[in-house]
Length: 244
Length: 247
Image (cartoon, rainbow over all chains, first blue to last red; front, top):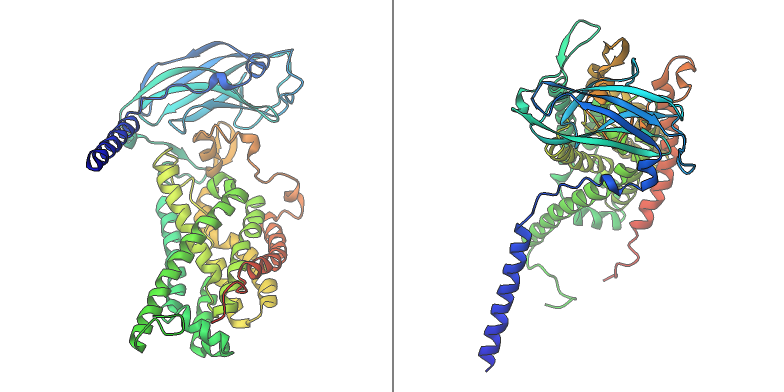
């Protein structure tokens, strides 16, 4: 009887574990963005986006996409939201799948925040350059200080190709043309690796000798001063000079 | 074996056990500091450390040293006082940089594809070694707070200059003067960090005798002295041994 009960218990457990494993391994793609998670008054009574146009639905890496259209700053702007005195024309994408090359409100280039007037209608244009292959829902967005992100309509854009082909050249005022994807990368790694090695060397100098128990015994016995030798101090001065 | 007899049977075994404790202790201390100091850093100086365009001459130079001298001060208070170990600040910084580089490379780059030349962390090993050396040579927490704290703040910008200088090269972009770091921030879209959040050189500091970085550095140095003093006591409080039973 006991053997039978044990067997039932064991196989029931196996069944439960198999069910759990099957549930965990099945992960359907999530395609909701939470656009409607914003409060209705925030979506409907702040910025009205209209006449939007996404120039392409499918591009290759390094190709450009332009999003243009208009937005109206609604007269019934909610009192609970700060007026759009500091606003930033942004793009809602999952990370830098595109890079933003240009953005304009009217004819003004707007890499910074701007002031918008309630009741006015503005034309805008954003030029993006495809960077990462995949299917991306690309939104317009306006970040308002004291109001948060006010997301506009989105459209699926497919990017094909390979991200390793992406280039982002910039010409500096010193006459150099550099690729922002890799510029200064080697220099960054070098200095960080050098400093990390120096830090490890400082630590290893002391942990090559006994670290915890013997030192604790000596400090408790009142012999703490013997733990730092004149050689240790010379080494310290060397490291101090090197880092300063 | 009872509590009154030794756990080891020979001197050689005692040495072996002591060394095993050393490696375990170092590993645990390193990992605990990596986690805790990292959380502290992210909640205080986070964005200034994440993004190249936030690495300015004002708030980065000011905020980073002040909030980051906390754990080094506390750890020094414990491991110098109890063990005369002069690497309290260094182990903190090596820990946080270890965690930060894993985060930047595998998450910022590997997951969200921000280029590493835009999201590298702040170099702080030189500041930590300076703080440890001052404590070791002076043997005084007060001296370390004043001279070490001031040096901690002053050394930050020059130590990071070799890394960030190439990003401050000017570019004329669509008729506007920007630095390469500014363009990185503009190009690589961050939906959660709208431009007006970017706390970069805000205020009138630039009109104060034109030199921004030295003013920020001295202010952060003086504030670091104060924070070192406060967090030394945090370290002492957490480093108490009064709960350890005397045998």
